Image: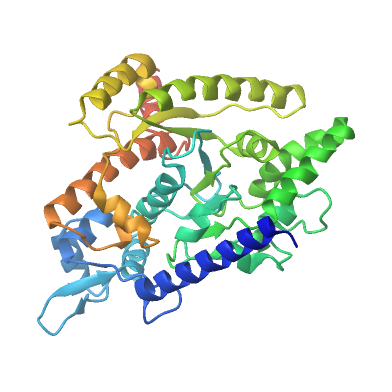
Amino acid sequence: MSYTVNTLRNMTRSCEMMRDRVKAVVFKPDERKVLDITFGPTAAAELVGRTPEALAKAEKEGRLAPPKQLNNGRRYYTLEDLTHIRKALNIHPGKLAHENAVVVAVQNFKGGVGKSTITKHFADFLALNGYSVLVIDCDPQASTTTMFDIQPEALIDEEETLGNFLSPRSTFDDFRKAIRETAWPTIKIVPSSLGLQDAEWDLTATLTEGGQAVREGLQRLRIGIDSIIKDFDVVLLDPPPAMGFLGLNVMAAATGMLIPVPARQLDYLSTIHFMDTIAENIEILEDHGTPVDYGFIRVVCSAYTPSKPGEADMWKMMKATYANFLLNQPILASEEIKNATQAFRSIYESKPSAAHATYQRCRDNLNAVFGEVLNEIHEQWPSKSISRRSSDTAGSVAA
């Protein structure tokens, strides 16, 4: 074996050992991530859409179990308690059973724009608010998979993986079996694995066969998602940072797109090329019998520091350029997010690393950003769409 290969292998082993050491410290004494999230009566009531008084009344009437209590008398609820409360009080924030999940691709070809961080945080936000979420990590780099405490290399001998499902050479065709549990009771994940890059090569090989083989290769992820489309409220796709067959599969499967763009000139300019490439590739998909029509496309300014004059100017330029396609709220750069991701967590499952007010500002900012995207998702469900209900009401009045 060559010096180069040996060197790379040794570096990989060294990095894996350090990663395991970090996880041992972060997750101790458990080997796997365990959620340690509790909510006081006010926070719990806000998350389920009721008042603390309404919860207390339901508990007094016996419709809800009383909250747990610490030795100091503090009353609290767990994430599982919130699920029980919603069920007991008939609170359904998500879609109706017959409606399809909204499939959101968090996509940009530029590295370092925050794709995986946004995907993880958005998934946790949705789960906190009562939505059932499936995350599909389509990026061989597997950052999102790692943040959900799954080691991609541990799946190398597994048959039931996303890579095997997407590969035309594989006989594994039950997409549901590739879905794994996470520490979050209402979030599941189809993790990335080392075989995902092999699937890219296998899919590319269908070009030599042409016709039906190419069409099937472009639609494999869509077919898999269609088999579970009613089991979840939202499916989040974390695509690879390049437009090969994996990226085309993501584009074909998505029904909405969220594009992270930092307020930096190079990122802004590269996004011009990205959007042009996306349009060209949608035309390729449609030419091969795979129609694409997204319910929404939104741009989010990521890692924004308003105190930096250059970024403030770029934010103004983005508002002028993207207009109604740009989310009103940018994601503010925050040490809280950086510190949380270094511990393989989102800010929603972390405690403050600095002042509580700083931590709360970060959460409030993310809540505002993701709340905008959630409104777009609601518009895709007739049962939740404000505009459709308003239109129906206007029509009935006119009649």
